[in-house]
Image (cartoon, rainbow over all chains, first blue to last red; front, side, top):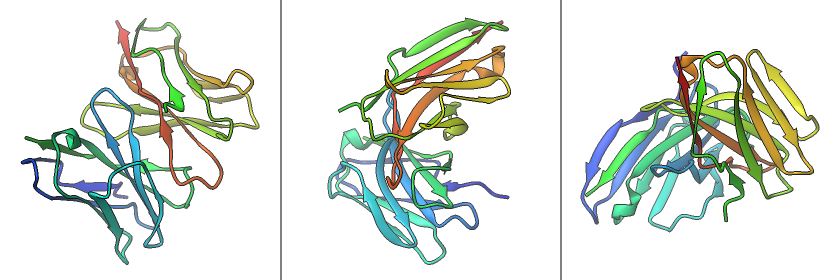
Length: 113
Length: 112
């Protein structure tokens, strides 16, 4: 079975640009969460979607948005990129709505220059 | 507000010896704790977990201990192997919460 897949694996953007990151969950998983991992720190929660509705939001500015599609895949959008947005963005999927049993993808490495 | 803390950024252990990784938390609402292992260029991989109703959980070479009164948990790896070299993250959550709260991670290096 395929795990959680994320695309692209790497990308470089310029300050002020917009970026869209994509995630396909494990088949049958209805919950998708997004985390940001800055170098030297642990992952920080950004969003959780369950059954296509936002169920949780972390302490991130409104420049960050996400959505979940009918096939349970998800996109994370970040507008007006700042240098500080440079990070590894991780997607995790789960059968359940709560914080148990997450499987993480390998992440998208975003570099803002 | 760092609710989950791993105070040791790095740890070096001889192959075959015990590795002990520590984690402290401040939120008494946390009732489920997890350890993840992360290799470079990969996402975190689930290792072992423990519910707050237990004080110990064992899976092969890995054992997690939970001390609720001290709000402290630890991961023991015995015996340590070179393939265990990675960054280890402690994470916590609570029933009904939609997120995991991670510590900063500890880089474990197993020396031959």
